[in-house]
Length: 362
Image (cartoon, rainbow, N blue to C red; front, side, top):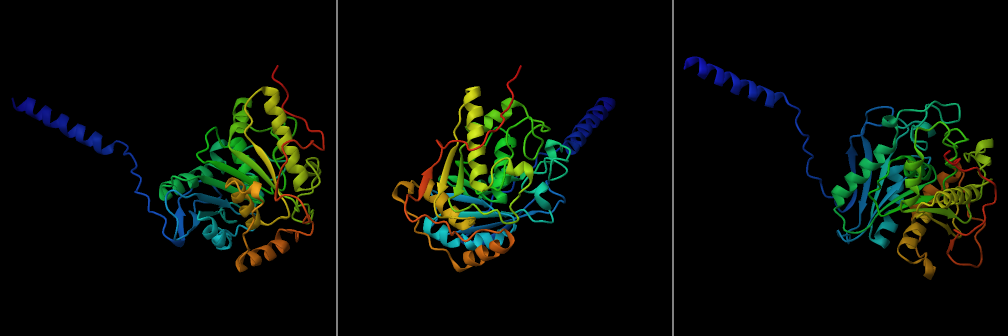
């Protein structure tokens, strides 16, 4: 009897030890609601050149409720997320949207390789070698969206917006970040240059050395994407990329964006897959992140037909615009048309240059 008891106790003890040593499911803390006004959170993030947390800046208008929208804005070349959220406050109050600006710092995501190009290669030009998918930056975008949705608990729309360098990051996330997007709209505005779905050109200008199947790539064309162009964003001042490979895409941002859209559309039509993208020009706007953001929200709010761009830039936006003129070489909107609608749908424009597309499977 004593042996049986001893064996039973030993079995119970072993079971308890195994249960103690077994991997535990990580419990996610209950999300903290976004407070009214400006706030800052730190999001643990494993991508990047170090393990530093991501800073995420929020601004919530006092009138915002869970039925209203959330606007996640990815900054440009300057990496100025806090300035960006400050510049968007007036717009947020006018539109009654929560604005979220994650900061991809130069310390964590140094250079174009880590930010604009998503760390898909170990160099920011065609000389680089492919990086494994687990090292790509795009997972950070998904985790930012998940965090924001958990905190906001919105029943309204979630709109993701990238301007300039942020637009470059987002369009590569659309192409290479996986089949699912858990947002209502993806607005890609004033990107300087693009990764074309061309297997004859090396990354970052094409996909010759990118580990992605045609099926994965074609799935990107059914995502809720709109490419936005500033109608006066035609400057070639530095840091506008003027490499031969970039100039093959067009001689300014508008030409390059138009060509990218129509090449992707042509591929989708050739493969007979859905193509959900749109191409829109916001007239009279140059390389100006906040004015483009207002144009984006006007378009999504259905105000494009009314030509309503009533937003007045704040003082902080004027400061950012001035800094951008010096560091990002944003133009001064000298080409504002005297007449015409605020928005123009450019989906039927003729592609101005020839472009190779994905070779058909044999």
